[in-house]
Length: 371
Image (cartoon, rainbow, N blue to C red; front, side, top):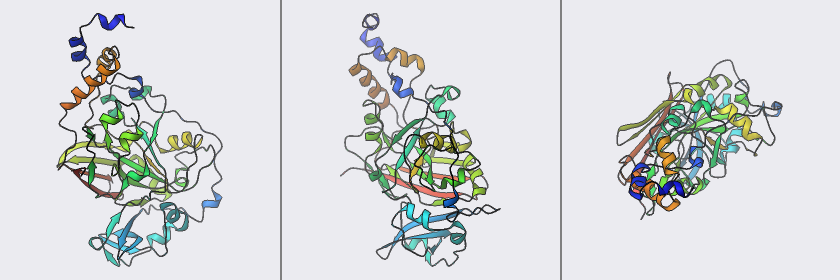
Protein backbone atom coordinates (compact mmCIF):
# COMPACT_ATOMS: atom_id res chain seq x y z
CA UNK A 1 0.00 0.00 0.00
CA UNK A 2 1.21 3.52 -0.78
CA UNK A 3 0.19 4.86 2.63
CA UNK A 4 2.67 2.58 4.44
CA UNK A 5 5.93 3.93 3.03
CA UNK A 6 4.63 7.45 3.56
CA UNK A 7 4.96 6.95 7.33
CA UNK A 8 8.71 6.50 7.04
CA UNK A 9 11.13 9.03 5.69
CA UNK A 10 13.02 8.17 2.47
CA UNK A 11 16.31 8.25 4.42
CA UNK A 12 14.97 5.87 7.10
CA UNK A 13 13.72 3.41 4.52
CA UNK A 14 17.04 3.31 2.68
CA UNK A 15 18.90 2.72 5.92
CA UNK A 16 16.54 0.02 7.17
CA UNK A 17 16.27 -1.73 3.83
CA UNK A 18 19.90 -1.39 2.88
CA UNK A 19 20.37 -5.09 2.31
CA UNK A 20 16.81 -5.77 1.29
CA UNK A 21 16.35 -8.04 -1.64
CA UNK A 22 12.72 -7.87 -0.63
CA UNK A 23 11.25 -10.22 -3.15
CA UNK A 24 9.34 -13.41 -2.40
CA UNK A 25 11.01 -14.77 -5.56
CA UNK A 26 14.39 -14.43 -3.89
CA UNK A 27 13.29 -16.56 -0.98
CA UNK A 28 12.35 -19.50 -3.16
CA UNK A 29 12.95 -22.79 -1.40
CA UNK A 30 13.22 -26.48 -2.54
CA UNK A 31 10.99 -29.56 -3.21
CA UNK A 32 9.12 -32.55 -2.16
CA UNK A 33 9.15 -35.12 -4.91
CA UNK A 34 6.74 -37.22 -6.82
CA UNK A 35 7.30 -40.93 -7.15
CA UNK A 36 5.64 -43.05 -9.80
CA UNK A 37 6.48 -46.30 -11.56
CA UNK A 38 10.06 -47.59 -11.28
CA UNK A 39 11.95 -47.70 -14.58
CA UNK A 40 12.88 -50.79 -16.51
CA UNK A 41 16.67 -50.63 -16.52
CA UNK A 42 17.37 -53.95 -18.25
CA UNK A 43 18.49 -52.24 -21.46
CA UNK A 44 21.23 -50.46 -19.50
CA UNK A 45 22.77 -53.50 -17.85
CA UNK A 46 25.47 -53.83 -20.52
CA UNK A 47 26.66 -50.32 -19.74
CA UNK A 48 27.10 -50.85 -16.03
CA UNK A 49 27.30 -54.23 -14.33
CA UNK A 50 27.38 -53.53 -10.56
CA UNK A 51 29.99 -55.43 -8.57
CA UNK A 52 30.28 -56.23 -4.91
CA UNK A 53 33.03 -53.70 -4.21
CA UNK A 54 33.34 -49.97 -4.82
CA UNK A 55 35.43 -49.24 -7.91
CA UNK A 56 35.20 -45.52 -8.65
CA UNK A 57 37.15 -44.59 -11.77
CA UNK A 58 38.43 -41.05 -12.39
CA UNK A 59 38.21 -40.02 -16.04
CA UNK A 60 39.65 -37.00 -17.85
CA UNK A 61 38.96 -35.44 -21.22
CA UNK A 62 41.99 -33.74 -22.71
CA UNK A 63 43.77 -32.41 -25.77
CA UNK A 64 47.07 -33.99 -26.80
CA UNK A 65 48.88 -33.46 -30.09
CA UNK A 66 45.85 -31.66 -31.59
CA UNK A 67 43.54 -34.57 -30.73
CA UNK A 68 40.79 -34.68 -28.12
CA UNK A 69 40.84 -37.92 -26.14
CA UNK A 70 39.55 -39.54 -22.97
CA UNK A 71 41.58 -41.34 -20.34
CA UNK A 72 41.59 -42.86 -16.87
CA UNK A 73 43.82 -40.96 -14.44
CA UNK A 74 45.74 -42.55 -11.57
CA UNK A 75 48.58 -40.99 -9.62
CA UNK A 76 49.21 -38.29 -12.19
CA UNK A 77 49.32 -40.63 -15.20
CA UNK A 78 46.67 -41.11 -17.88
CA UNK A 79 45.71 -44.45 -19.44
CA UNK A 80 44.07 -43.87 -22.81
CA UNK A 81 40.50 -45.06 -23.31
CA UNK A 82 40.30 -46.79 -26.71
CA UNK A 83 37.80 -45.35 -29.19
CA UNK A 84 36.42 -41.94 -30.10
CA UNK A 85 33.66 -40.35 -28.03
CA UNK A 86 32.39 -36.99 -29.23
CA UNK A 87 30.34 -36.31 -26.11
CA UNK A 88 30.11 -37.23 -22.47
CA UNK A 89 26.94 -39.14 -23.26
CA UNK A 90 28.71 -41.25 -25.87
CA UNK A 91 31.47 -42.16 -23.42
CA UNK A 92 28.96 -43.23 -20.79
CA UNK A 93 26.76 -45.21 -23.18
CA UNK A 94 29.59 -47.01 -24.96
CA UNK A 95 32.01 -47.97 -22.17
CA UNK A 96 31.88 -50.27 -19.17
CA UNK A 97 33.16 -49.26 -15.77
CA UNK A 98 34.85 -52.59 -15.11
CA UNK A 99 36.77 -52.34 -18.39
CA UNK A 100 37.87 -48.78 -17.63
CA UNK A 101 39.02 -49.90 -14.19
CA UNK A 102 41.38 -52.41 -15.81
CA UNK A 103 43.21 -49.79 -17.90
CA UNK A 104 46.66 -49.50 -16.32
CA UNK A 105 49.05 -48.42 -19.09
CA UNK A 106 49.53 -44.82 -17.95
CA UNK A 107 50.83 -43.72 -21.35
CA UNK A 108 50.74 -39.99 -20.62
CA UNK A 109 51.70 -37.74 -17.74
CA UNK A 110 49.15 -35.21 -16.59
CA UNK A 111 51.55 -32.36 -17.40
CA UNK A 112 51.76 -33.52 -21.03
CA UNK A 113 48.12 -32.77 -21.83
CA UNK A 114 45.66 -29.89 -21.74
CA UNK A 115 42.66 -30.86 -19.64
CA UNK A 116 39.19 -30.01 -20.95
CA UNK A 117 35.79 -30.10 -19.28
CA UNK A 118 34.70 -33.74 -18.89
CA UNK A 119 31.14 -32.59 -19.59
CA UNK A 120 30.74 -31.53 -23.21
CA UNK A 121 28.70 -28.53 -24.26
CA UNK A 122 26.06 -30.61 -26.06
CA UNK A 123 24.71 -31.82 -22.69
CA UNK A 124 22.07 -30.04 -20.59
CA UNK A 125 23.22 -27.93 -17.63
CA UNK A 126 20.50 -27.94 -14.96
CA UNK A 127 20.97 -26.46 -11.48
CA UNK A 128 19.38 -26.55 -8.04
CA UNK A 129 19.30 -23.45 -5.87
CA UNK A 130 19.19 -22.95 -2.07
CA UNK A 131 19.83 -26.62 -1.36
CA UNK A 132 22.21 -26.67 1.65
CA UNK A 133 20.79 -26.26 5.12
CA UNK A 134 23.24 -23.64 6.38
CA UNK A 135 23.04 -21.69 3.13
CA UNK A 136 19.28 -21.47 3.55
CA UNK A 137 19.60 -20.42 7.19
CA UNK A 138 22.20 -17.82 6.18
CA UNK A 139 19.69 -16.56 3.60
CA UNK A 140 16.90 -16.17 6.14
CA UNK A 141 15.05 -19.34 5.06
CA UNK A 142 13.93 -22.39 7.02
CA UNK A 143 15.27 -25.61 5.45
CA UNK A 144 12.66 -27.67 7.29
CA UNK A 145 9.88 -25.65 5.69
CA UNK A 146 11.21 -25.86 2.14
CA UNK A 147 8.33 -26.88 -0.09
CA UNK A 148 9.60 -26.75 -3.66
CA UNK A 149 12.81 -27.32 -5.57
CA UNK A 150 14.38 -24.20 -7.04
CA UNK A 151 15.50 -25.24 -10.54
CA UNK A 152 17.19 -23.18 -13.24
CA UNK A 153 19.57 -23.68 -16.14
CA UNK A 154 22.84 -22.19 -17.31
CA UNK A 155 23.87 -21.74 -20.93
CA UNK A 156 26.16 -24.61 -21.89
CA UNK A 157 28.43 -22.10 -23.63
CA UNK A 158 29.62 -21.11 -20.14
CA UNK A 159 31.19 -24.57 -19.63
CA UNK A 160 34.99 -24.42 -19.61
CA UNK A 161 37.91 -26.45 -18.30
CA UNK A 162 38.60 -26.56 -14.57
CA UNK A 163 41.70 -24.35 -14.73
CA UNK A 164 40.31 -21.74 -17.13
CA UNK A 165 40.54 -18.03 -16.46
CA UNK A 166 37.31 -16.54 -15.13
CA UNK A 167 36.48 -13.53 -17.29
CA UNK A 168 34.76 -10.76 -15.33
CA UNK A 169 32.49 -8.89 -17.77
CA UNK A 170 32.96 -5.13 -17.92
CA UNK A 171 29.38 -4.47 -16.83
CA UNK A 172 29.50 -6.82 -13.81
CA UNK A 173 30.35 -5.37 -10.40
CA UNK A 174 29.36 -8.16 -8.02
CA UNK A 175 30.93 -11.41 -9.23
CA UNK A 176 30.30 -14.35 -6.90
CA UNK A 177 31.42 -17.97 -6.59
CA UNK A 178 29.41 -21.15 -5.84
CA UNK A 179 31.12 -24.52 -5.50
CA UNK A 180 28.71 -27.34 -6.32
CA UNK A 181 28.67 -31.10 -6.73
CA UNK A 182 27.62 -31.97 -10.27
CA UNK A 183 25.78 -35.19 -11.09
CA UNK A 184 26.38 -36.66 -14.55
CA UNK A 185 23.52 -38.84 -15.73
CA UNK A 186 23.93 -42.44 -16.86
CA UNK A 187 20.84 -42.89 -19.00
CA UNK A 188 18.09 -41.15 -20.91
CA UNK A 189 14.92 -40.26 -19.00
CA UNK A 190 11.78 -39.53 -21.01
CA UNK A 191 8.94 -40.22 -18.57
CA UNK A 192 8.07 -39.76 -14.92
CA UNK A 193 10.30 -42.15 -13.01
CA UNK A 194 10.70 -43.21 -9.40
CA UNK A 195 14.34 -42.80 -8.39
CA UNK A 196 15.39 -44.01 -4.94
CA UNK A 197 18.65 -44.48 -3.11
CA UNK A 198 18.40 -48.17 -4.02
CA UNK A 199 18.27 -47.61 -7.80
CA UNK A 200 20.16 -44.32 -8.00
CA UNK A 201 23.15 -46.02 -9.64
CA UNK A 202 20.94 -46.77 -12.65
CA UNK A 203 20.57 -43.02 -13.27
CA UNK A 204 23.75 -41.35 -12.00
CA UNK A 205 26.96 -42.28 -13.81
CA UNK A 206 29.34 -40.05 -11.89
CA UNK A 207 30.18 -36.75 -10.24
CA UNK A 208 32.22 -33.63 -11.03
CA UNK A 209 33.09 -30.26 -9.50
CA UNK A 210 31.06 -27.34 -10.83
CA UNK A 211 31.54 -23.67 -9.98
CA UNK A 212 28.34 -21.75 -10.64
CA UNK A 213 29.85 -18.28 -10.99
CA UNK A 214 27.19 -15.58 -10.76
CA UNK A 215 26.85 -11.89 -11.56
CA UNK A 216 24.67 -10.85 -8.62
CA UNK A 217 24.02 -7.34 -9.94
CA UNK A 218 22.42 -8.94 -13.02
CA UNK A 219 20.76 -11.92 -11.33
CA UNK A 220 19.11 -10.21 -8.36
CA UNK A 221 17.70 -6.89 -9.65
CA UNK A 222 16.49 -8.53 -12.87
CA UNK A 223 14.94 -11.38 -10.85
CA UNK A 224 16.23 -14.14 -13.12
CA UNK A 225 19.07 -16.62 -12.91
CA UNK A 226 19.89 -17.44 -16.51
CA UNK A 227 21.58 -14.23 -17.66
CA UNK A 228 23.60 -13.54 -14.54
CA UNK A 229 24.90 -17.12 -14.40
CA UNK A 230 25.52 -17.80 -18.09
CA UNK A 231 28.33 -15.46 -19.08
CA UNK A 232 31.15 -17.20 -20.93
CA UNK A 233 33.57 -18.95 -18.49
CA UNK A 234 30.95 -18.89 -15.67
CA UNK A 235 30.74 -22.71 -15.57
CA UNK A 236 34.08 -24.49 -15.08
CA UNK A 237 33.60 -28.26 -14.79
CA UNK A 238 36.10 -30.90 -13.69
CA UNK A 239 38.98 -31.56 -13.74
CA UNK A 240 37.90 -35.17 -13.19
CA UNK A 241 34.68 -37.04 -13.88
CA UNK A 242 34.47 -39.76 -11.25
CA UNK A 243 32.44 -42.69 -12.60
CA UNK A 244 30.67 -44.60 -9.86
CA UNK A 245 29.71 -48.20 -9.18
CA UNK A 246 26.49 -49.06 -7.32
CA UNK A 247 28.48 -49.52 -4.11
CA UNK A 248 29.94 -46.02 -4.50
CA UNK A 249 26.57 -44.25 -4.27
CA UNK A 250 26.96 -44.02 -0.49
CA UNK A 251 29.64 -41.38 -1.11
CA UNK A 252 27.06 -38.94 -2.46
CA UNK A 253 26.19 -38.25 1.19
CA UNK A 254 29.82 -38.02 2.31
CA UNK A 255 31.61 -35.54 0.06
CA UNK A 256 33.37 -32.45 1.40
CA UNK A 257 33.12 -29.27 -0.66
CA UNK A 258 35.78 -26.63 -0.04
CA UNK A 259 36.36 -23.32 -1.82
CA UNK A 260 39.06 -20.74 -1.17
CA UNK A 261 39.76 -17.29 -2.56
CA UNK A 262 43.42 -16.30 -2.43
CA UNK A 263 43.94 -19.12 0.08
CA UNK A 264 41.16 -17.97 2.43
CA UNK A 265 38.42 -20.55 3.03
CA UNK A 266 35.03 -19.18 1.95
CA UNK A 267 32.91 -22.33 1.65
CA UNK A 268 33.31 -25.63 3.52
CA UNK A 269 30.45 -28.10 3.91
CA UNK A 270 29.35 -31.69 3.33
CA UNK A 271 26.80 -33.18 0.95
CA UNK A 272 25.29 -34.73 4.09
CA UNK A 273 23.64 -31.32 4.51
CA UNK A 274 21.79 -31.26 1.19
CA UNK A 275 18.13 -30.43 1.72
CA UNK A 276 16.95 -32.48 -1.27
CA UNK A 277 19.19 -35.21 -2.57
CA UNK A 278 19.79 -36.64 -6.05
CA UNK A 279 17.07 -39.32 -5.94
CA UNK A 280 14.36 -36.88 -4.90
CA UNK A 281 15.41 -34.31 -7.46
CA UNK A 282 15.59 -36.78 -10.34
CA UNK A 283 12.19 -38.20 -9.40
CA UNK A 284 10.64 -34.76 -9.55
CA UNK A 285 12.38 -33.51 -12.67
CA UNK A 286 11.60 -36.72 -14.57
CA UNK A 287 7.98 -35.59 -14.49
CA UNK A 288 8.93 -32.27 -16.06
CA UNK A 289 11.57 -32.77 -18.74
CA UNK A 290 13.64 -35.23 -20.73
CA UNK A 291 17.25 -35.99 -19.85
CA UNK A 292 20.01 -37.70 -21.81
CA UNK A 293 23.02 -39.68 -20.69
CA UNK A 294 25.82 -37.23 -19.89
CA UNK A 295 23.55 -34.37 -18.83
CA UNK A 296 24.75 -32.33 -15.84
CA UNK A 297 22.80 -31.41 -12.70
CA UNK A 298 24.51 -29.05 -10.23
CA UNK A 299 23.11 -29.70 -6.77
CA UNK A 300 23.42 -26.31 -5.06
CA UNK A 301 26.08 -24.47 -3.09
CA UNK A 302 26.92 -24.29 0.64
CA UNK A 303 26.94 -21.18 2.80
CA UNK A 304 29.70 -18.63 2.41
CA UNK A 305 28.96 -16.85 -0.87
CA UNK A 306 29.81 -13.17 -1.24
CA UNK A 307 26.14 -12.28 -1.65
CA UNK A 308 24.64 -10.82 1.51
CA UNK A 309 20.98 -11.68 2.13
CA UNK A 310 19.07 -9.42 4.54
CA UNK A 311 17.23 -10.60 7.60
CA UNK A 312 13.50 -11.31 7.22
CA UNK A 313 12.75 -8.08 9.11
CA UNK A 314 14.80 -6.00 6.67
CA UNK A 315 13.14 -7.78 3.78
CA UNK A 316 9.71 -6.80 5.07
CA UNK A 317 10.78 -3.18 5.33
CA UNK A 318 12.43 -3.35 1.92
CA UNK A 319 9.20 -4.63 0.40
CA UNK A 320 7.69 -1.21 1.14
CA UNK A 321 10.21 0.56 -1.05
CA UNK A 322 9.43 1.61 -4.61
CA UNK A 323 11.11 -0.73 -7.09
CA UNK A 324 13.88 1.64 -8.19
CA UNK A 325 14.72 2.63 -4.62
CA UNK A 326 14.71 -0.99 -3.48
CA UNK A 327 17.39 -2.05 -5.95
CA UNK A 328 19.40 1.08 -5.35
CA UNK A 329 19.50 0.08 -1.68
CA UNK A 330 20.51 -3.46 -2.59
CA UNK A 331 23.38 -2.27 -4.78
CA UNK A 332 24.59 0.10 -2.09
CA UNK A 333 24.61 -2.68 0.52
CA UNK A 334 26.56 -5.04 -1.74
CA UNK A 335 29.24 -2.40 -2.36
CA UNK A 336 30.47 -2.97 1.17
CA UNK A 337 31.05 -6.69 0.57
CA UNK A 338 34.78 -7.21 0.02
CA UNK A 339 34.13 -10.90 -0.66
CA UNK A 340 33.07 -10.25 -4.25
CA UNK A 341 35.67 -11.34 -6.80
CA UNK A 342 37.97 -8.89 -8.53
CA UNK A 343 40.71 -9.15 -11.13
CA UNK A 344 43.73 -10.99 -9.78
CA UNK A 345 41.80 -13.17 -7.33
CA UNK A 346 42.43 -16.92 -7.47
CA UNK A 347 39.53 -19.25 -6.70
CA UNK A 348 40.25 -22.89 -5.83
CA UNK A 349 37.56 -25.53 -5.39
CA UNK A 350 37.85 -29.17 -4.37
CA UNK A 351 35.51 -32.05 -3.52
CA UNK A 352 36.65 -35.25 -1.77
CA UNK A 353 35.23 -38.07 0.32
CA UNK A 354 36.40 -38.40 3.91
CA UNK A 355 38.27 -41.65 3.13
CA UNK A 356 39.90 -40.28 -0.04
CA UNK A 357 38.28 -42.87 -2.32
CA UNK A 358 36.55 -40.09 -4.26
CA UNK A 359 38.76 -37.15 -5.19
CA UNK A 360 37.42 -34.86 -7.90
CA UNK A 361 40.64 -32.85 -8.10
CA UNK A 362 40.97 -29.09 -7.70
CA UNK A 363 39.67 -26.30 -9.87
CA UNK A 364 41.80 -23.18 -10.09
CA UNK A 365 40.41 -20.02 -11.71
CA UNK A 366 42.25 -16.72 -12.03
CA UNK A 367 39.86 -13.77 -12.30
CA UNK A 368 40.65 -11.45 -15.22
CA UNK A 369 38.88 -8.35 -16.49
CA UNK A 370 37.18 -8.62 -19.85
CA UNK A 371 39.40 -7.10 -22.54
